[in-house]
Every structure is written in C-alpha cells, then in structure tokens.
Length: 232
Ligand SMILES: Nc1ncnc2c1ncn2[C@@H]1O[C@H](COP(=O)(O)OP(=O)(O)OP(=O)(O)O)[C@@H](O)[C@H]1O
Ligand SMILES: [Mg+2]
Image 1 (cartoon, rainbow, N blue to C red):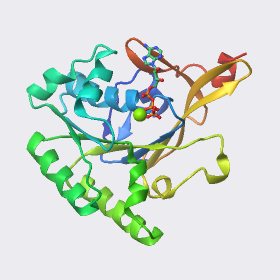
Image 2 (image 1 turned 30 degrees about the vertical axis):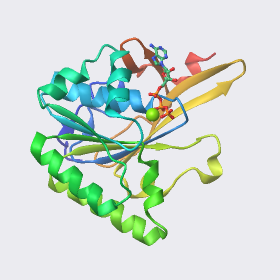
Image 3 (image 1 turned 90 degrees about the horizontal axis):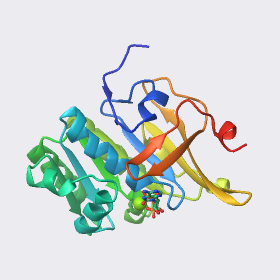
Image 4 (image 1 turned 180 degrees about the vertical axis):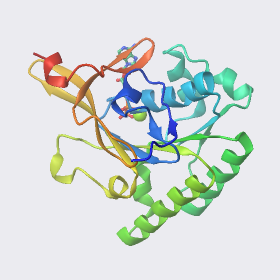
C-alpha cells in the first residue's frame, strides 16, 4: 500500500491506532453512544489542527450554538474564541434543512478560512433531509466529493446506540471512507468508554477496542491497552 498523506488528529493515542492519522481528504463518520465523547473528540481534532499543525478548521453545528461549543471547549482549556478571532477557526450553527444550501455554506466558508479540517456535529440530522435512501446516498456522496475537491479532511458525528446492534449502521457508515466507533457502555457497576476503528480507507488500522479517557485536558485513547485488559 502506498503510504498516504495523513491528517494527524493530535488526539493522544488516536493517530497511533490509525497508523499515523486519517488519510488526507477522507470523510470519516464517528458513531457513538450518548455522552461517549464525540463532541470532545471532534473539537480536539479542530483545535489541534490549528495549534499543532497550522491547519484552519470549520465546525458546522447542527444543534448547539457557537457560545455553547466555545464554553464546552473551555472546560478542556481550549481557547476557541481566540482562534475564531484570528480567523483560523469558525463555528457556524446551521439550522436550515436545505441540503444544497448547507453544501454551499460549507464550501464558501472553507474557502474563506482556507480550512483543511471540517466537522459536522451531530450529523445524524442528515437523515431528516431525505425520504429516500437513494437520494440520501447520492447527496452524501456529493458532499464527500465536494469536500475532497476543496481539500478537507472531514468528520461527521452520528448519534447511535451501539448496543442496539440490530440497527447498527446507517447509510453514512457505508458511504464514508472511515468509521470510528465510540462506546459508552455499562459493565457491571460502572460505565466504560472505548474506541474502535471499524474501517478507514487508505490505511492499516488497529483491530482492537481501546479504552478512552475524558479528562480536564480532553479525550485520550489508551493505544497500548486493549479494552478487556483495562477493565479486569
Ligand atoms: N474533565 C472531565 N472528566 C471526565 N468527564 C468529563 C470531563 N469533561 C467532560 N466530561 C464528560 O464527557 C462526556 C462526553 O461529552 P461529549 O459531549 O463529548 O459526548 P458526546 O458523545 O458528544 O455526547 P452527545 O451524545 O450528548 O452529543 C460528558 O458526559 C461529560 O460529562
Ligand atoms: Mg455531542
């Protein structure tokens, strides 16, 4: 396999289980349980992009206001507001349910910022746009193509209950280049968090589930540990 150019997430441990990072221009879906760390992880991805890798980023919020997201980032010590002021990052809350308009908004704003990283959180609302699966597939593919054309590595979050595995995967996971799963599950008397890479086109991946931690400095993956070592 030709070694791809990679977009490093900078999230401790995550690039390690991706053998170096997300192949550039991939469209990745992060599917996970409620409170599993999806928003924390994608914010960390964008924040690191600016701070560590000099890559501007765009956060499309389909639910929370920019203020709420800025406040959430502050809990981890990330001053998103300063980066927005420097035009290295932006948060846009999109309430419209018009897919073509969403696409245009993304393209305009990515070009304006020179963004290399894009996040859409939560992307689950995508389903509401479409009645028919074929339409949905076409449009998600067209979004993916547009993102590749404008040179972004994108992460779309998806809220699902991973335990209810009968309806585990929606269309997004099939169309996407990569799927990362975040589990927040009950084990005996506590909840445990873990991460697994279901697929990532263009790179080798760890085939194990790894524990994750959310701390005052953000999300981290314990890449050297396997889940069931950790919880014994
Ligand atoms: N310093 C911390 N230490 C431990 N847990 C924390 C810390 N800061 C935040 N958390 C927890 O991290 C969890 C993950 O939050 P996050 O919003 O990233 O998950 P999510 O998957 O996006 O959730 P949702 O399904 O609501 O969108 C929250 O429930 C929060 O309580
Ligand atoms: Mg969230």
